[in-house]
Length: 319
Image 1 (tube, rainbow, N blue to C red):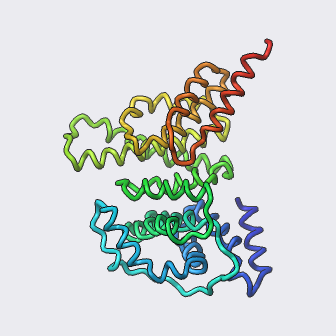
Image 2: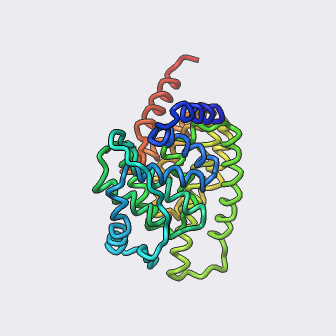
Image 3: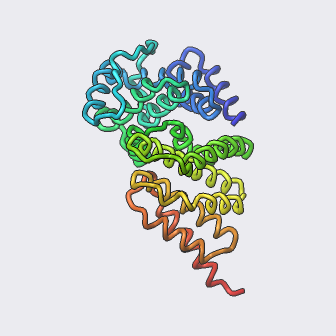
């Protein structure tokens, strides 16, 4: 991470007067600050890129967002027209088109949520949905997946895990060093434990407001579980992956259809960890469970099938 940051900064310095429109370098620089939780710096960079690449949309952003917010009937009555936001004027780049506008705008939303500016976060998250539907000149599988993720989070009660899911689903997690993965695991283990205690609290009375909050907690709990399992697996800590899953099994049944995509990935990482531990039959069952979950965000059924084939090949090898 430090090496890439140094190279990007050196490249921007060499570009001199052209650095302002070096959109791809700036995006990677913003990503560095984003992963490092420097939300203010990341926000400034990502917003300047949005102004450069989506000037026509931003000119009508407030009215478009307010219109869609009414259409989807957001649970929270947010008046986006009253939200005060400064957007600096940046020269439009008419040559270079950022191929990931949905990812860009979702990252802007993440920055605002982590800065405790919920209204502005929702404004940009809804913007990501609008841009994908109406303004994007570049359609791709990855953009479609993040669009689906954004639509799920619009109706989710908690935004705490959005930036972690973005890092995971945008495939940034595997780029991180073990030291950073350890930091993420420690952060999420504490939060996951807090959520588990809330979910199991026996004195909680079921009413509509608590059910809504509880489902948000369950979503965050599953998100934590996924990121912790994936991070441990990437570091080779497969026994820890299995422990985390076994500890979570008693909560999985609470997940509604909206969280099926998280279970799809949780089952996959559990299957991978079991395979690495030589527990082939159990691994195959977990991977088959992952395959049963259809139409998921960032569907990884192809990876599950590859692991099943690998398991079958290992079983057929002579001992």
